Structures are given as structure tokens and as C-alpha cells.
Image (spheres, one colour):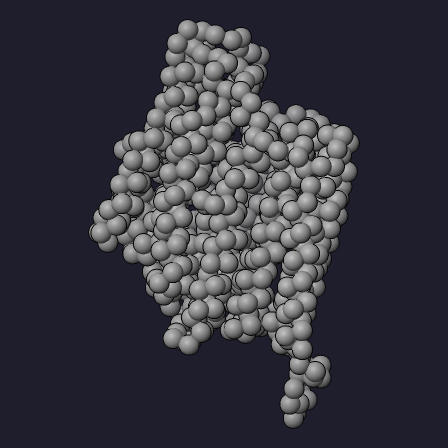
Length: 494
Length: 115
């Protein structure tokens, strides 16, 4: 029965393969992709229930004993993230039907999306560090295709940079894994954790080197401070549904990998690696804020908001207390949902106005008030106004920071919310209020495009309002993070 | 032997870095190919370069045997890097068609800066 944990990987995989067989039948592609994502959501919700009842589910492929076979581990954190991923997948797929255009759909857009989901879900669920690399590559290969699909000049420019950055990043990921393997002789993440805690005192210098290498590699994907310069340019290029998938999922996979690796392997590395993570996260917040308030382009503002969120989550992770971890997980799931929502809302605005810069239009409120209020609620959720979903996570993060006397970090996170709100209100006041300027295309399928937006918005608002109901799940997700022995025992079964 | 391999890997990393830092897209692709080969050699070296027998089961008294795992890892890494390199070459060709240049200086900047 524990094989059920493979479902989040297998369902999109088989879905994608079926879609590859019928490349030119757009309607069939849409229906099959939709069915796949709905089945995926149902399977994931059942998986959450199963993990809640039975604790961490681990399956070792080929029935080899645990440190030798490849483990797929479904702990609560991974399962929750997989579920969030599938919700965003459904919304972006529905949104794509009305916006991505037939030419892209004919060139295997849906299979590429599903393959990316295979990689994302695999990265969340894998319990083997080399398989993390493999699933990362699956995800990245699909994301290269999605980024360049359509072949416009700006997309080609962005993909060249994105591809080069990620090839180098992946090379260093293998280097880090090789160094770790040479020291410990194992690839199973639970086993690595155990062996690292055993060698304490002897070879910790090299362990720190590996910790920093992992931070470099995953930080590159997540977009933390010195490594984020590729991100605004690359994410600017693709069409909105792809951007929503990237913004909501890809950076979060990097964040998840940092959380997993740092809580499982390097939780003792408080002398160098953790302070480094903490500092870089805070600088990321500051630079993300500067970017978010200095641009007038909606997409770019949102992209810099991704950086702010990544910084907030990683800062919270670096504190390594139970409270801050709970905050980080709350905020991580909230951020995936709200980023998906906001990118799709902005997509509707761009479809209607034809511009992504708010200097080019204003007074959208007089045309579509419903769009304005949807954006407004999502923006407040992003900034963390209670009772919307950003609030509870940020509250826990700041409490966690103050309780370990990290006042600077807490205040930076607090102030960052203010600037996030400022950057969002800038879009709202310039684009929606004011005199009506620019011509608005009203022939777009507005209601159909708003369906996925409202779907995600309702889930996000519900996540905030019913955070009390989510709390037991989040607690279960945090348990193995603050006490790795739970995870180790579930995988190795000792 | 490990020392020799380490020096070789260092040289390959140097060459890769030099190539990746150049302006021509083709040189950059060659650089990434060299980089991935250097990485594969690291994996091989990290497993330990013993001159031993094949790791067969049920062979009692086998004193030295090679670790098979790094080779499996390298195989995977090679396949992935081949795939990525092939994709990169096609991408470079398309970019050359579209931008009329194989210099990366054409890909600079962020479009939102122009407004």
C-alpha cells in the first residue's frame, strides 16, 4: 500500500506519454491534460490523508533494503507541496486553454508541462540525493522547452541565459554529491544524515564545504542573493501560464531542496553554513524589495516579489527552531498559491490591456471592477494582511526570529511586508484607478479566464481563514524537520 | 593515481571556465561539455580508483573490488549532459537564425529595463 507515494510521479508521467502519442489533436490534448491533473489532485489529497493517518510513507524501489535501493519518501511536507503543485497545475492548465494559443499547443505544450510536474513532484518526494539531481534535470529539461516554446526573439535570449546558468548549476550539484559520497559512501538522504551526525568532530570542514556547495546550487535555482541575476530576465520572457508555473513552482523546488538538505544533513553546521544562509536570505529580501518597488512593469514587480518570498522562507529556515519552521512551511505553501494567483491575474490584465507596464494604461477599474477586486484581495494576501493567508506564516516567522533574539532579521521581514504592499498598491492605484487610458480589449474570454484565477484565489483565502484546520498537518510536516530521527527511522526502519 | 586525476580535473575545470567566459555561443557550449566531463571524472575519482575485480556477489575472499555505484552515477550524468548539450546546440542554431549572431552580447539586458 505504500506504493501510493509513487502516484504523484507516475500519474503526470503516464499522462505526458499519452499526450505525446497525439501531438496534433489539440482538443484531446486539453481534455487528457485536464483529466490527468484532476486525477493527480485526487490522488494527492488521498496521499495527504494517508500520510496523516500512517505517518511517513517510504517505498524503496526494487525492494532492496533501504540504504541501497532508491527511496521515495512521502513525508507530510513533501506531500503537502505535491498537493499544492497539483492545484496550481490545474489552474494554469485551464488558463492555458484560453491564452496560450493553438501553435504552442500543437508543439507539445501540455506534455512539457506534465513532464515538468513529474520533475517537480519527484524532487519533492525523492529520498536519494542523486535522484534529486535526476528529477531536477527532468524538471529543468521540461522548463527549457516551456521557456523557448514559441521561439520569439526574447524567449531565445532568455533561454540561452537560463540554460547556461542551470547547466553550470547542475554540474556543481554533481560535484557536491560526489564529495558527499566520497566522505560517507552513501546516497540515501536518511543514511547521509545519520553518518554525518556520527563523524561529528573529525571531518566537519569538508562537510561545511559540501553544505555551501549545496547552498550554491539550490540557491541558484531558488534565486537567493548573489545568484538571482538571471531570474528577472529569464522569467520575463515566457507567456503567462508558463511564468505562473515557473514562479509558483521552480524557485520553490530550490527552496524545498535547501530546507530538506539543511534540516536533514547540516542542522549541526551552525558555525558557518547556517549563518551564511541567514545573511544571504536577508540580503535577498532587501534586494528583492528594491527591485519590486523600482519597476513599473507588472511581471517584473511580481518576479522580484518571488525573491522576497524566497528570502523570507530561507531566513526562517536558517533559525532552525520549531516555531520558525512552522512559519516557513505555512509561508511556503501560501506563497506557491498566491504567486500562481497573482501571475494569472496579471495575465488577464495583460490580455485586456496589451501592456505589462502600468505606465501604459490606467482606469481599468471602470471597465472590469471584478478583476480589480480579485487583484486587490490577492495583493493583500501576498502582503500578509490578516485574515488572508500570508499573515499566519509571517507572524510565526517574526515570532520565531524575535524569540531567538534575531531582531534585525525580524524587522527586515516586517518591513519587507510593507514594501510588498507598496509595490502591489502601486499596480492597483496606477493601473486600476485614475482616468481611463489606453484601449481595452473586451473580446477576450474574460469569464473563462477568471475561473482558474478565482479557483486559486478561493483556495488561498481559504488557506488563510482555515489555517487552524491546516495546523495539525503543518505540525506533522515540521516534526521531521526539527527532529531528523523521525525521518531517518521512517526510511531506514531501524 | 587520485592525485593525477585531481590535477586533470582541475585543468578541465580551468579550460571549461575559460570557454564559458568567452563571447561565442559555440565556445560556451563546448565549455559546458568539458565541464560536465570534468564533473564525471570527479565522480569516478571520488569512488576511489582501485585496481580491483568486478564486484560479483558470492565470490568469497575477494579483497579489493571497484565500487560500481560511481559508474552508474556517471552513466546517468553522461546521458543527461548529452541531452542538454544537444538541446543547447539546437537552441544556439535557432538563436543564430533569429538574432543574426552567435555572440552572447546580443542576449544581454532585461526587456523591462527598456521602458
